[in-house]
Image 1 (cartoon, helix red, strand yellow):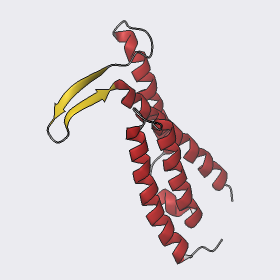
Image 2 (image 1 turned 180 degrees about the vertical axis):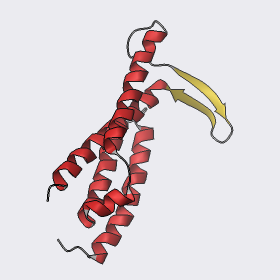
Image 3 (image 1 turned 90 degrees about the horizontal axis):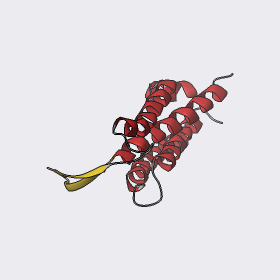
Image 4 (image 1 turned 120 degrees about the vertical axis):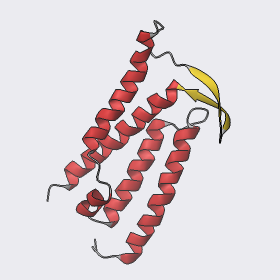
Amino acid sequence: MKKNNVILQTTAKVTFFIISLFSIHIFFAGHFAPGGGFVGGLLTTGAIVLLLLAFDLETVQATLPFNFTVVIGIGLLLSLGTAAGSILFNVPFFTHAFAHFDLPLFGDTELHTAMIFDSGVYLVVVGAAITIIQSIGGDE
């Protein structure tokens, strides 16, 4: 693959942005429709892989300076913490809670503990997939 393919790199940048926005939409829509943390995480991973195809690994790592193994750990803490939080309230494991809040900009908003769990799943999927891809792609 050419290293300085301007058309591929420009298209990848625009497509990365579009896929990332769609990933956020899928993540938030996932509570009431198909989607959620796993699918949103896969879409984000796909967007990052597109950048890896257009650029080299060092450029993408410089652009996204995250330690993805730490991202996996944060995701696991969120997911397991949400699931184990039910133990503190003496309710069955994985019982989720929700409440309505009147937020200034959004109006009546329903907040769920399942959203925190989905955030953890999202982070684990992105972190694990990118760690695997970086491990495979880093061996040159």
